[in-house]
Image 1 (cartoon, rainbow, N blue to C red):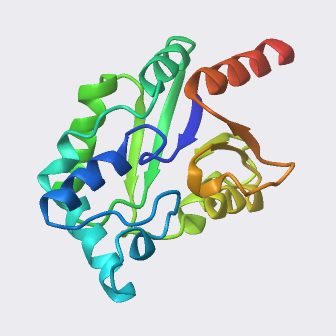
Image 2: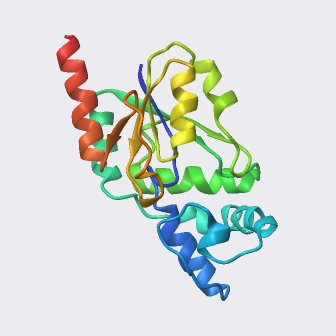
Length: 195
């Protein structure tokens, strides 16, 4: 099986816009854009930031997040070429939220693309979860630079999807893309070059 490792939120699914809608319904206003720090974005007390994300990630909203950009067409192209995806996400440990996340992925993309879904604790680092893939040279798709760095440490090939919160990050060993069309082209071209 040809395998690709991928994050979920901000990569496969559009977490941020849905989170903003949820926060607005709860009476919060976004006061600063282009930041990954939700305490700054919503003027929250730092200790409350984790609790708010955890509550959202365990909510019914996890069944219904939309595709992120053109992820549906990019995943479809790679699935058609024989790839399957191991999804590694810091969603949280609630087993019902994991079921909703799987349901959401299956609804948006179909059941075929997924090899596995690993849910880590809310906002958890991915170093340990990537360790079993050490020295495989697999592609690793992310939106957080620290998780790309974790992938580099274990011999993966990180791809960083550009967001406002990561546009200042630069590492020549991390490929930066704008969308899934670029991801699919790069991975499929890499296979053609190796043939």
